[in-house]
Image (tube, rainbow, N blue to C red):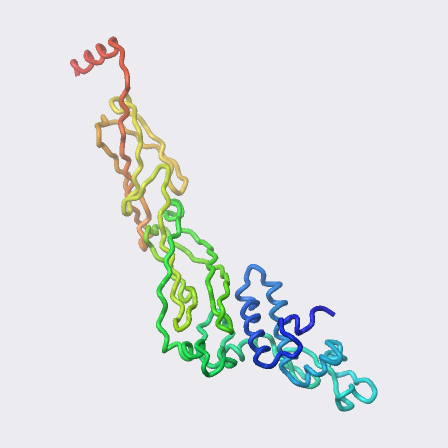
Length: 338
């Protein structure tokens, strides 16, 4: 035999109905599988154990059998085998054991599916749902401040949004991307105490996403008494790139050019953000401030898959730091005859 039902709920053997319900709600909220996506196998096991423990200890007859005979006495013969001669001590002859199922016959009574029990006591099977209404607060006293501030979601104000920056590379904003993010928030358990829960969210960004784009997760903010949880808002921020900067839908590429190339012509190889490569010939003389525009090689225009901005190549001419007298003289001859 494993843990006792009292140990599972963390209550003493003389715990009353209110203590049992409070313990169940706290643990059921903690172990609901939808709140534990990264450890779902254990959560399902614990969630079922908490449900079974509550169903036994909250039922006077089942609890009496359990206290006298343990779990074996409850599940003896899965509710169909005959009891010991003369019946169990303290119970009438013919009394059978209990069995856990999704609703079939089970000895002294039927045992509910763990998710059905959760929905009955919380008013919803969604552990992230707003918790107004009688389901969640059925065990709260009439003068409980938690009950007074949460009887109806229509009486609550929505809490402020929580914004946080989320960095993306220029490549991700160019091609589009799908991301997963874990959001950790504080919620209020059945007793009104704070506890942390985490949930993984997935979101998709289309090609051409701009810095400042907002991704909203409704109702995922921290819970506070008297408020409907606000939203968590991710604000997309562009990470610096080693080559490119973005100007609207245009991409700007800065390229250093030696003076000799600026005067005589050259070619450069451009590697795009989606990893294509092409060569750009420059035959004209480059002067300071000169730029060359390549049409339709900029950022995708969001909502218009067939069009892009432009690629603007800006040239930065590098001058020599030293020339010998002979080279200076030769340059004067070249330019004087130009």
